[in-house]
Length: 449
Image 1 (spheres, helix red, strand yellow):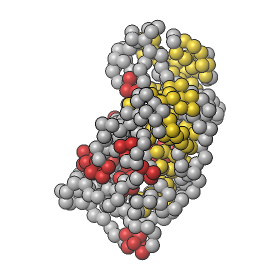
Image 2 (image 1 turned 60 degrees about the horizontal axis):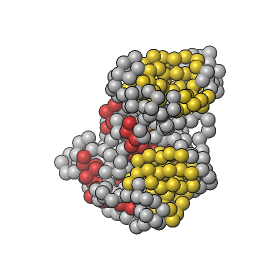
Image 3 (image 1 turned 30 degrees about the vertical axis):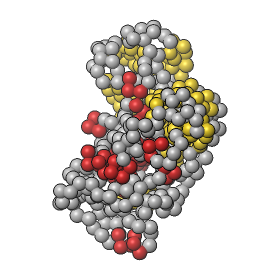
Image 4 (image 1 turned 90 degrees about the vertical axis):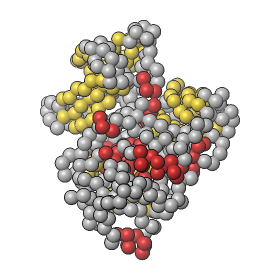
C-alpha cells in the first residue's frame, strides 16, 4: 500500500470537504517542486506540538538528545522535522536523526528558520501553528495541512495510522512520524507536491519510507524559490556559553549580529506559542551577552536583527535552559563547540526487561583511546579542566582505537532493575589538543521508566 500525503486544503468548511474526497495517485509526472502560494512572515515562525497521539509507538523514544533538549517522543520527532527545513545544520553538527542514511538535520539553506515553542495545551485553531492527532481516517490519507498559510497553519495526523517516533526506522506496520511531519511542514511553508521520485514532497510514499526525513535537492530548490537562498548577511549562531538558568547571563557567539537593536528569542515556558524575547540588545557583531528571561525554557535560541525579512532571523540553536540534574551537559574540556563537539546520545526502550536500547558515541577523534563511564549518580566533579559527572563509577568500558565517527553500545535493561533507577554516562578520551590532554563528551542520563 502507498499511503497518501494529502495536498494542503483550505480552512475547514466546503473547501476542506471537497479536498477530503480527493484521492491522490502516485505522481507520474517528471516535473519538480510546485508552489501552493503564500509564505510565512518572520512573525509566523513559531511552532508547537499538542501530544495527543494515542499509540504507544508514538512516544516510546524516551532518551533525550542534546540538539533537542527538554523533549522526547512525538514532540521531539516533529521538532526534528521543523529543524530539517532550517538554514543550517542543527546545533552546528546536524546530529539527531538516528538513521545513518539521513545523518544531517538542517538542509534548507534558505532565509527560513522556525522558532520551536514546546508543547501546546490543545489542538488550537486552523492558524495556530500546532501539530496534533485527529480521530478517524480519510482513506489512504496520512495527514493534512490546513491553509492558507498567510496567517498560520495547522497539521493533523489521522489516528487510524500507527505513528512511530523513531529515531530509528519505524517498526513494521507503523508510519514514520518524522517523515510525514517533514512533508506536511513543507506544505505549511508554501510548497505543493513534487513529481521528483525520492523528494520529501512527493504525494505518496511506501509504508517503510524514511528518506523524506532529509530534504532532496528538489525540496531545497522549492524552499529557496519561496524564501531565497540564505543571505551571506543572515545572522548566525555558532555556540552558546555561560549560564543556562533563567536570570543568568548567556553568551551567544556567531556572526552578522547588528550593533544595536537585536532581539533574542527563547522557547517560552508559558506554552502560549509566543517566544520569550529580549529586545534592544547590543553586539560587537560576533557576540551577544544577554540575561535569560524568567519565562524561558529548554528549547532553542534565535537572534533577530532589525528588519522584517527571513534574512534578519538566525538559525535556531539548541539551548538547555533550566534543566534539572542529570540532563545533558554540552561542554567538554579542550573541545571546540559546534561540529567538533563529541556527543553521547541514545535511542530505544529503557524499561526493565524491555526491547533494549543503543547508546551512540559520535564525532570522536580517530583512534582516540578512552573509556565510557557509568554511575548511579551525577557528581559534577572538576576533572582535567572539565567536569566529570558519573561518580562514583559503577562500570567502565574501554574505548581502544575508536574509529573516526564514533562507537555504538547496545544492551537491555535487566528485569531486576527497579523503576526510577537512573544511570549517568559520560565518555573521556585522550586528546592531544586539550590543555590537560583529555576531553569528554556531554553526560547522558538514562532513566528506567
